[in-house]
Amino acid sequence: MRQTKKRLRAADILDAARNIVKRHGRFEEINFTSHGTTVTHISCKIGGFSIAHSTPFQQQPIDWEIRRKAAQLGLSAEALKKEKAYNLDIWKGKKVFGVAWDDDDELDIYNFQRGDWQAEFLRLVSE
Image 1 (cartoon, rainbow, N blue to C red):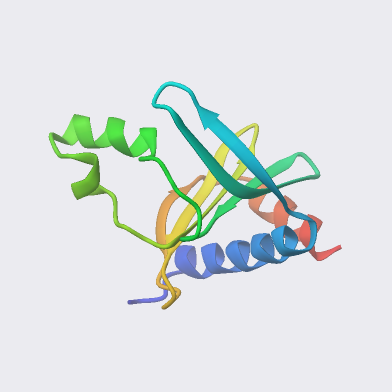
Image 2 (image 1 turned 90 degrees about the horizontal axis):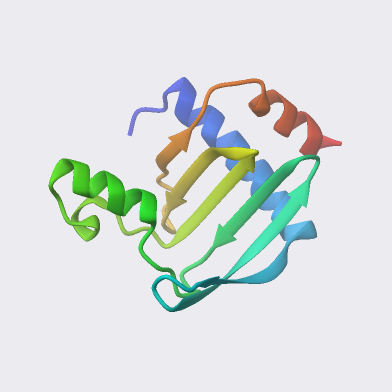
C-alpha cells in the first residue's frame, strides 16, 4: 500500500499511543447495557487525552458508529467493518483518531481528525 503523508502521520501517532498505553495503561471494563456486553480494554488518560486499546484477546461488540454508517449505506455492519485484530482510539473531548490493524501492521484508518491535537499529542508523549 502506498505510504501517504496521512498514513505515515497515523503510524507515528499509533506508535506513540502504544508506547504510552504500554507504560501507563490500565485494564478497564465497559458495560454496554443496551446490548448486554462487557468489554475489557486497556485505557490511559494523559494531558487531556484518553486512549483505548483493544486486542484480539478481548471480546468486542460491533462498533455502533460502524453500524450507523452501514445502515446509511444499506450494508450490514459486518460487511462494512474490516475485521482487524487490534484497535486504538484517541479522544480529545471527542474522538479524534481511530485505527485498526492486524499482525502485518497494515493500518485501517477509520477516524483521523485534522487539527492541533496531533502535534500536541506527539509533543506530550515525547516528554
